Structure formats: C-alpha cells, structure tokens
Length: 530
Image (cartoon, rainbow, N blue to C red; front, side, top):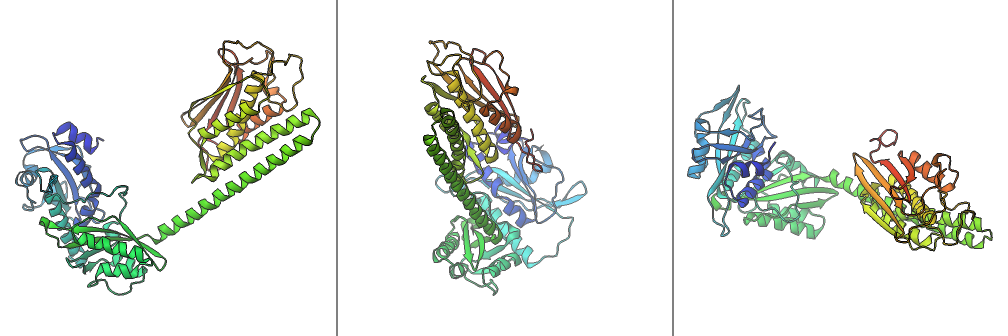
C-alpha cells in the first residue's frame, strides 16, 4: 500500500508544504470523523478534467462505516465526484444532493475544501478535498450528545476550509490525545460549559467535582480542582488560550489521587472565535501503572548496584588472599578468579545505570578487552580492536557472554603472545587460560593484535575472537580439554547461552574462536529460540 506522500508525489503537482499539511490533517482527523459519525476520505486532483485520487481514509469509531473496502489509491472521475469538483473549484463546503448507494449501503455525500494558510496568515488556494460520507442505514434518534457532536463537527469542517484546522503540533508532543468517546466538553466564547458528555462528567467527578458542568467557568474550575496550584494555573491558561484562538499543548490535572488528560482546541469557523472544544480522558490507572513501573525500575537498578558492590567486595577479598599465598599456581588461580568476578560486576554496573534489563554491550566489551591487555601475563604489547557492533543485549545474555569473552581475550593475549623467555617445555600455570599453544615464532612484521568481531543475522549473534599469534597445537581437542577456562566457556556457551562455540586455526595464522548465540528466548522455559 502506497503512502499519502507516495501517491501525492506520483500523481499530482502538490508542493512539499501542501503534502505536509495533508499529513497533519490525516494525523488529526479521527476527531472530525468521530464527531461526524462519518467516513472521511482525502481526495487530491489528478488532472484538470476533474479526476480525483483518494490518498487517505479514516473510519469513525462512533458509527458504522460507509465503505467495507479501502478507498486509498482509487482514482475516480465524472459524475461520481462532481461534488468534489464543486468544493475544489468554488472553495466552499458542498452539502447538496440526494443519498447515494455503495452496494447495499445508502450514504450521504459532503465535500470540504482543504486550504493551507499562507505565511502572512491568509487563506490560500484549495489544495485538496475531504469527502465526508455518512452511512444512513442505521436510523438515529437525535440526542443532545449527537446534536453537539454534529454541531462541533461542522465548526471543525469550516476550519479545515479556512485553513485553521488542524492546529500546529507543539515540539516533542505525541499524537496521543483524548478521543471523542473519552469525554467532550464544549465551551462558549466566555469559557462557560454549554455541553458535557456523560464520560466527561464522570472524569470530572473522579477529580472531586460532583455537580453538573453546564454553566461552569471551566478555566476557573481547573484552577480550583488541581492539587498543585501551578498545575491548576497551567490548565486554566490552556483553556483561556484556546478561547483566544490558540492551540495550547495537552495538559494533565491531578486531584484527589486521580489524573485527567485534557486537550483544548479553539473553535473559529470563518475566523470568528465562538468558543472551544475540550477533550478529556481519565488516565488515573495509566499513571498509577507508570508510577509502579518507575518504582520497580528504581528497585531493580538498586539491586544491580548492590550486586555490583558485593562482587567488587568479593574480588577485593580474593585479591587480598592472592597476596598472602606463597604458591605461584594458587596465586595465579586467585587472580584469574578476581578477573572473572570483575567482568560480571561490570555488567551489573551497566545495568544499574540502565532504565531496563538490557545493556549496550559494545562499551562493556571495550572495557573487558582493555583490562585483558593490562593484566595478561605477557611482555608483548598487544593491540585490541572491535569490528562490528553487539548492540543492546538482555541482561541474561550479557552476564554470561561477558565472562566468555573475558576468558577468550585473556587466552588470546597470554597464549597467542607469551613472554619472550617461555619455551615449549615450560610449565603452564594451572588456571591460566584455556588453550595450550604450540611454540611458533610470531612474524615480527605483524603487529600483535586481537580482533573481536560481532554481527547479527536472523535473530542470532555471531561473535569471533581472532588473534595473529602462535596458533593451536596440532593435537588440540577442544572437547577433551581439561583447563578451567575452557570448561567455563564451554559450560556457559552451551548451557546458559544455548549457543555453539568452535576453536580453530585462523585463516592466515593465529587462533579463532567462533560463537553463535541465539537472541530470542522461549517464554515458557527461558531457552533461546532462533
């Protein structure tokens, strides 16, 4: 389905500013459709012979639609769109004519010219037509609510013809707003309520106002009801601004533990201020859930902060213990444990500053890689480089993955580029890394380097850790390796991460570790699903 902009640019000569105005109408005309109990179709002229193209459509939520099939993209000419031609050429709202039939549905046609006001604030030329088509198959008993809806709809239709509706959107303001069915209040030019729908009356009653709204000065009422005087003043000023012909931003009013969202729109048919339309919605439960989520989020972040502090305390205790141990093998094992605990603490530190249970993983990888070069037992200066992006990862993946990468990076540095005096027969510390490396000379022309690569493909995270060091020994078997580092990596990748890992010789020398980790998790058992 082509978009409004695509259709307009392909079939018409409308200017970008004209198309932007049509987008604003299509973004705000649900209000008019609901008040009119009618479908709205946005038609733009295609040729000078009276042919029109439908570029947008909205159905009412207050009445049955006149069209079962979507009309967007339909090009029509001749007698069927004569009413559109009258509105377009004469620049007036067309309401004459007998009902027409769409299949077995009788409908009443109306046509509203669309103008874009000039920079000087004057009404410009007609650029499009809004067709307002009402399904007449359902008999209606005129009620006070329906009459007020239709009267307000006619005022807004005239404002479209004048180029004063919809009002400009405020910077940063979303399209979320109260709908007609949530609650409608109509004001006269003096700001007094002339009509309030039952839902609007209920919303104000929840704020603590038990009397009828009709006859009340709504700005003064907002000032009295609001629990915070500043909020009350802002809400009142919004009503007064709408009465002056301005379009104030949406406001919230808090009172007696309840919250109401309001939107005030000026009513200025033919440029004459006759009052304002105020839409209201009771959002008490929405804000209550928001506050509960904020509290929960703060609690979770505090937990991550305390876990990080506890892990750092454990790492400090292990570090102290390592200083008191006289056996070199035991000291190395404790130092390895310190680094493993510190890598987990790094994830919790990041989560404690995040608004959700996910982390931007690139920064964590960079910090782990930097630490690996600083603490690794090697005399060679090894460069670290990251290629690609891990993106945002959920906490349950990030915690295990950071430990895996910590092991792989330390192994790549320590065993790919060992101290210069290390020989083939020299003993390897018990807990130092996961891969026994065969003795081979490193090409002095190659700068020692470890590269971490990452990319996502079909809900899978592909990671590789590659070095240009000495490479794997000929008889290396990852499945039968008994080193602690290898056991940790294998257990985390196949267990917690539900992924796969392969250790192999690099294409141009060195060693390459390749991981594939699923990013989607099964909701029933917590397992990853690709």
